[in-house]
Amino acid sequence: MTGIDIQAHAAAILGLLRAVGPDLTVYPPEDPDDTGHVVPDGADPPYVAVHIRPGFGLAGRLADATTNAVFDITCHCVGGNDIAARAVAQMVVDALLDVEPVIPGRQSRPIRYLDSPPARPDESTGRLVVDQTYVFRLETLPG
Image (tube, rainbow, N blue to C red; front, side, top):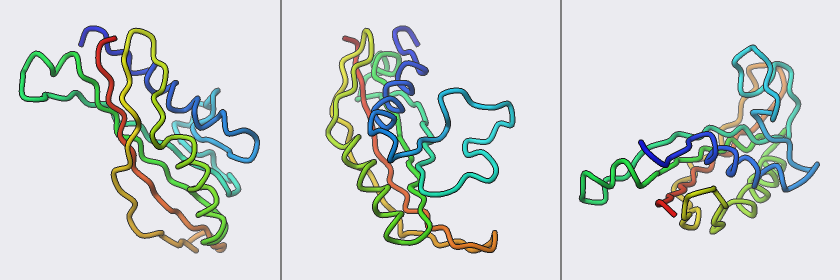
């Protein structure tokens, strides 16, 4: 997997979200604890929890499998109600959609929208939280 730095891609994606400012809490935090949780126990909404899944594009040629990087970005936009979850989702969409992140040694294509399943309300903790999930894709080439 020459030339594909997974951590650099993740840092660029998370950096775009953290650049939104203090109105958007982004998990995992820059300095995660040792619990292994993306979102710390007791975190209060609103926030976005981000999962980044690296993959490698084939583009019809086996050689491309080690040069084309494909990252699916799942953003759980969590709020105390539907309105708050949508507000978080709006900040996430504004921060990521159509942006070409700067990643050393790579050429980024614009981040694209993939999917947004229905919002999921959850009252299992005794209080309502709503998770509006958005999935994006980032593709990069050697640059």
